[in-house]
Image 1 (tube, rainbow, N blue to C red):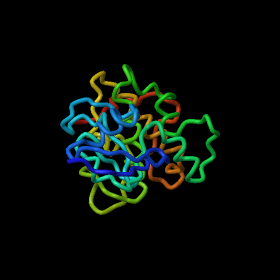
Image 2: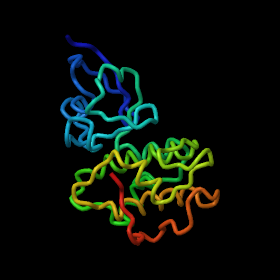
Image 3: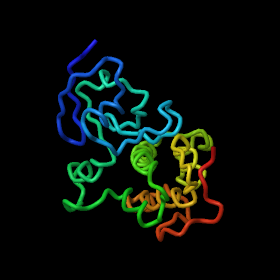
Image 4: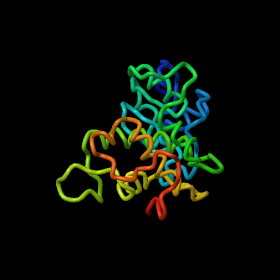
Length: 204
């Protein structure tokens, strides 16, 4: 069964006819040519396909495209544009702060998982800014973005190269750049130079 849908992808409305069984990942990659979301496990276990839908992190390999009719989907390709549209100071060719932090901290090796890691970090930092607790947040106190919090909140994104030691500082650098340090939300010692803290790694 085919269905006509319109999905706003990285700020551009895209209308297409899809089989009701088509995943958002396949629609993006195979039908629309948006290839930054990667097909890793195709079972929702690696996070390489992560995109933002309505500002929330979703696994596009487990999301049916027909459920996204009218949705606003942002991929790694559209993050800088999203920052500009949101009133940021990005120049036309500038990167999103999370993308820049990943470069500064050398937070990748082969790069296959990087788009999903970056998009997930953007969504995670928004969740953190809203005060959402994680499984490692202590009690009812506002969470602090220490290594344990970043590791837990990013644990759904796997890196087969093992670049976690630099992914964690990259996420904390992006948080610091967004002003989280000024509010005391980032624990002391949050990386801003790109140097990985000893023992920093993503758990699980």
